[in-house]
Image (cartoon, rainbow, N blue to C red; front, side, top):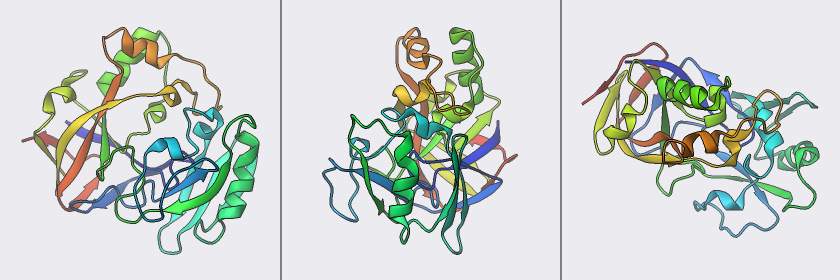
Length: 245
């Protein structure tokens, strides 16, 4: 099996960035992945504490967010966001949170909770799990969903961190509790990922177009991908081999 893509999402639900390589750190999520998030005006949270996704602006409720792409300079923490219907925005999220909020407001439904402020959570990020997780996705499982949906789908819909090929569809669900090695890192497979309406959105346009949840439910579940934790620090790169231990 082989790693085919690496992705990070610097601001949760607000843009994705492809990487060639990354160094993973034991006990942490992918560096700069979901480091920031946009809390809405009905959020219930404390600074520097993890809370669930219901406190944030996200693609399940605001589909237009799914069309955002990102470029981050890790040294200066300067972030450029792009959307097909908006001018490009370059900000430092800790300093320019208000500018980010104003930029994203045109994508938001005025009848829903509105984006309010930017928050930050170092080392573990605002992942969708109470533990610092990294998501792993199987290209063959993606192709299986395409076959059921009878339509091509962008892999970016699943917002996975690490993509791989070379395994049968859904084989990854049998790895729960085991470890994998890739590059010089080692990860433990923790649990399956249950999916939401965000995956029904076309990541080129930001509009809902394919019912991916119906396709998954045809298989008797609503899961795609698996959550992992880093148990041994190391560097991984596109093209590295992946082995179940």
